Structures are given as C-alpha cells and as structure tokens.
Length: 170
Image 1 (spheres, rainbow, N blue to C red):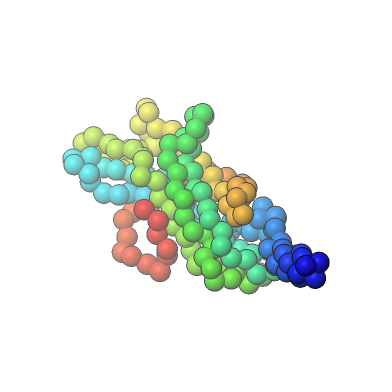
Image 2 (cartoon, rainbow, N blue to C red; image 1 turned 90 degrees about the vertical axis):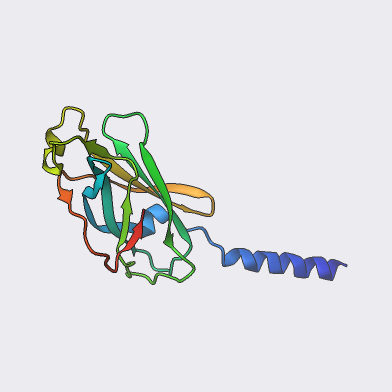
C-alpha cells in the first residue's frame, strides 16, 4: 500500500512540473499596434464608426506559449467603466515559439458613434459628444487575468476595406 501511495505522489509531482505558471505580463507583449475609428458604413441613415485595434502578440520569454485567452476592453476616456469588451483567443493550442509573433489580430467594438446627415465620418472628431477611447488588453491563463497594455485610439478614420489575412473579431 505504501508503495502505491509513493507512486501516486511521484506521478502527481511530475505532472505539476509540466504545468509551471508563467508570468504572462512579463513574457507576452503586444506589438505592431494600429488604432483608429473603423467606418462600419451607413446603418439606417446614419454613418457608424467604432473604435478598432489591430496588434500582434509576441513571446518575449524563453519557453513556448499556448492557450492564452484575451479580454479586450473599450473604455471612453474619463468614464468609470468600459463601453464594450471582447473575449477572444490570443494563443490557441499551437505553441508560439520564443521571439515569435502571432498573425495580426483585429478587434473592433460593437459600440461607437453614429452621425446624423448631413454630418459625415470626417465630422466625428468635432462632434460635441465625441470622447476619445482607450483599448485595454488583458491576458488570461490558468485563471489569472493580467494587463498587457493600454492603447489610445487615434483620431483617424479607417475606411471599410476588402477582407485581408488579418484575424477579425467582430
């Protein structure tokens, strides 16, 4: 019986070695960011623009990384909370090697601004109710949520475009 207990303890110990926790905030970085206001198009009879963030994740550590979820939150500057957020897969089961980066990841809010005619998308930044936004990116793995960065949304309009190789999250 003692021998069986010893084998069980050994197996549990060895499986714990492979599940070492990694400080994601130290080894996973957000790079190649591009922000702006995506022109969704005309919705009803109004122009709609939403905050948008494109980025890559880079493994700055010395071990491969996998299975990381992201929480991407869209915050109006000066507000007490987010207006919208998206939970997405940052890294799937395929490992991201040390020093490697993901393909571009594109995340857009569902919430944004609509402009009544005759206002156009170029009038967005001069509208009296316009507020700048910040996009906050968090990583989750093993139940821990850690911040990866905050990115101000630049005051530029991103026109609607043809699909690309970018991973889009609505």
